[in-house]
Image (cartoon, rainbow, N blue to C red; front, top):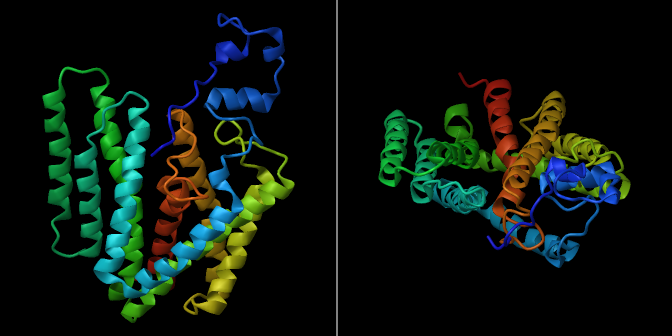
Length: 327
């Protein structure tokens, strides 16, 4: 990640003109500017760096989407390898943000544990997942003894395990989606459609929210978390997700009924945006802008996959329980 050192955030006392010596003009700042200062973010409407331009977004999509389709169709270790790369990069970004908070997560062990979670998802039977989880917790605790005594060690241990759950376990549902045909009794090739359904509806939601927000966004109820997110954009994302559900049903997901397409669109339209806000909260708390600039036009892995961390489990459990009725 090359986000650089984050700009210092104003404290609530500074915003009120307390001991920091803030002028009276600063005390009369607009509410959204105050909220932005409290969150360690730029004010709403401040343009991002040139790397976030539309042409970079389009170019990245033209490269990534065909690769995603190819890997989803291949399945097996090829798709698991893709998810593993995403988990490794995303978890590294997360731990780097936490180090910006002066915490000391166990990076290597956390990444290894997250990859173990993916392996358990790929081999759901006979993988000793309970043993691996217990061993991982023991190792985190044991390695922390080597660092003792240091400040905020409990927080460092907690952040290590939280990163495994947030990035590793939630991402593992992409693997579970691709391997769902074994449990649902469908053709293995159909797993590609299950994975692409999650990506298609989620990124349609993101695109709808981004487009409508830029064109019509006025109300910003989440300014303390993400100053650029608007209520109008949220409704645009929800509508785009619902429409994407019906488009997917007509295009490549005939296993969905009209009711399934609508319900799944609503669920993803809501929770994908919750996932986006959660990642924004983590970045604001760590005083970061984008998680990194590894994907031109999009930022970091967490910036691109944050919505999928919430959407992929929803799609998996909906297909598993409501559509295929897997016990």
